[in-house]
Image (cartoon, rainbow, N blue to C red):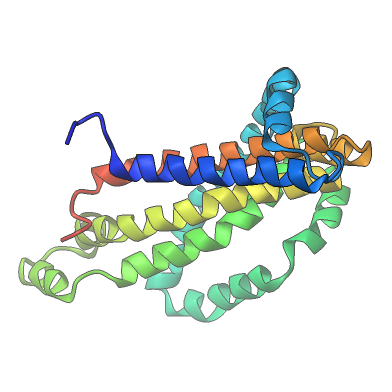
Length: 250
């Protein structure tokens, strides 16, 4: 088999091509009006024609997602470590975050906009809230999955608690942490877009809202595709780092 041929990629391309053709000809043959469901060719055409505004609004949303996700990681990892090592934190902080996670974030969005305004801060906080909890849970699971025989080995070597933490528990938790980041990243995108829906003058969420409000369905779909592409790029950007965790399968 040629090294240029990737069977999985070919299957994936064939699947999505068939799906696109079914959508295209299904819409045309059924006579559905384009303002209700435009065909893929019209959406792709709109995506190209509106590439300037869509790209500029994507950069706004990307900025909100990036900082929201970074803050979620910066706070989520040490809080997960605190919950893991402290029984007091496990019985107080952990239930608090579980309760906060149970609150519908969409319901919180209007309040956050009222408190922090229409600027970057409110959208960044929404992205943070959506991404925060998966990172805590994944990091906790990673810390708890440290192999028992390696813990025994470190005790036999009389390693200090700090040495055991940095040289054993942190590497053992990295695979789960990255899994949590892969879950959290698309959620951060959703959080930022929800924040833009509720109150914003910029971003892909605002573009979707204004396009749908004016009956411009093709632009709405084009903006939705831009959100999807942004989410996929960020997801695979996180997944890229998995290749450096060579001990994952051990």
